[in-house]
Image 1 (cartoon, rainbow, N blue to C red):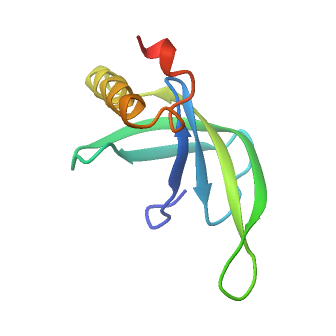
Image 2 (cartoon, helix red, strand yellow):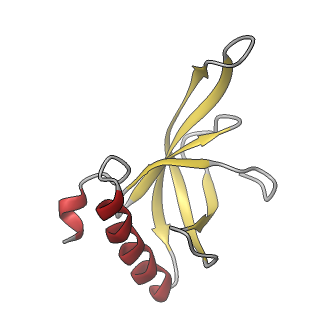
Length: 107
């Protein structure tokens, strides 16, 4: 993703996430993922690798529009970022377990 491409995290886990993006990405591509977690203004940066990508159609006002779903494996980050990310996942799982894959693994 480039700096101007926003994505929406549909679900997250300790090791990766599913993002909804405007366009699909090539499997194996490396990405810089910048996350804004919970209701915080703190950005967390990760290096990620695209593990899978597919196009789906989302209903719109006039017609369906294509969006990409992209599975990203988190590869690397600063140690402080990992701790912050995992604490944020725990808080998110308390709010809505549907957003966090395997919330019991945070435990």
